[in-house]
Length: 150
Length: 476
Image (tube, rainbow over all chains, first blue to last red; front, top):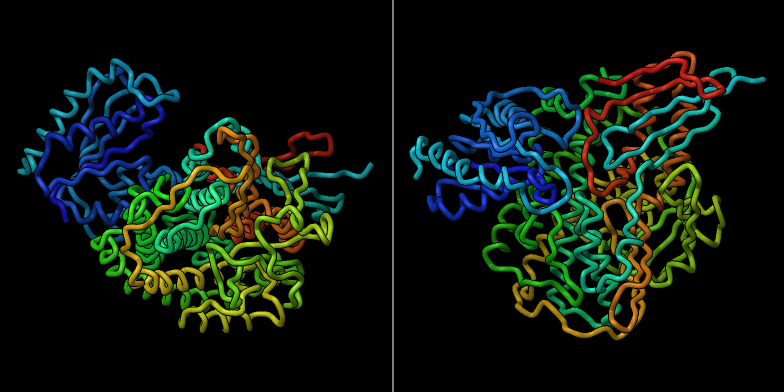
């Protein structure tokens, strides 16, 4: 069981959609606390709910499509029942819902997103997102510190 | 002029990939014909031309997000044939472990995530609730079991291959890294729980299947051939062996067929209404050579599994129908038996004294210009066939996937179910759900890179004879 779980998700082969992977790479170099676990994944799937249920605090990292490109938004999350009837596009709130209903625990959770501007095929992020990454990493580290981890 | 109407189910939900079904009605509103269309195009056979053959396993793994391991293994075996090497015994066993982990996680996805809403909530359940969330609410323990079993398979793949999806660990000549003792012990430690889940899910399934007698009788319940791989002693194998073909009476039609000679006994037909080719057994011709592959077919053609609990279940399974088990509804039970077998067999292989050997790869340069690799994927036999030039570049590739081999049977199954349940003058969601559910029994893997489109709404259109839209029903 870890105290802080960071879940970076997106597609690293779709330009800015892979920004969370980039941030996760940077975070793994800056955070050495074994109680902080960093996961990267393309999509949120039901299997993640068990891991989430075992954390005290969870930070989801994702790219956003709407907003000002490069803008960082932190949002507190609550469990939600998603509208989708399928298994491939679970939202962070949907994962929290499963965590609560299947495993009886719903950790405190935050979604940290950065608005992207390019989601075409490619393995590099746009300049705008590249410029925002250091700030994103710094804010995640602040969140982790606030959870008493670093 | 007689009015001919069409019902379109587009997309088919809770399957891997994108497809639609059309039901053609006659003037009385009865189903006259039905077709299962695969509406996506992948083109991997062409795009790999000109690439070095050594890239093929990694490239081919990208075909699928659910069963990349199957493509890795079939592709690596085709490359082994190009190298003309015998891979080290430990590499052979590690590949088997990898493949069975994949079977477990893929079968768990099919049973627990895709079909359990039908099985647990019923075929006539409110479409708005007939999904994973409905299952989670009705039976959280079953949901947790599904999640755990899928994790079990995924974690083995991750421990061996470095990542859950698209690992590149299986290479021409063997595998790239040996198994560490720590990883071996961690996997072994998880086996007792996986075994318990497999046993209790089978028990649950056999109990609830009694409530599906009408579906058992009409879900692809027709004579066909069955094809699967068997070891020399007639037991099940997912990695090698010879190919066996059985008929509906339980008789052997062919035995000891070599995968590299697949073109002698398998034909493929292209129909203009689908991107999915239809494979058939050549000696019987098209479409009389209709055959099924995958769990139902494998258990029909093997003499035994080779592990204690799975053999007990297999004996019971073979009693379900008088000769071969024909109903495609029984794919579900066969899938669960294969999960049980894999977990038992994984334990045996991981306890093998050779399994931690560091000698896991044979090195060679190409020694042949043509190679075929085959293995049993979750959905049936998978063939990869490559031709290379003197520089080792791919000049031609042919893939025969399991879902294509089930294409004729899926189409016939859709027609059988539609004729049995669908009345065009009074469309009810349960009727159309059964048409989809029979496709789910085959667990087709269509896109191999599964992702939902929007909300994966089920749209049913009733069209007039000139193609004019008469009415539309949309699933939430």
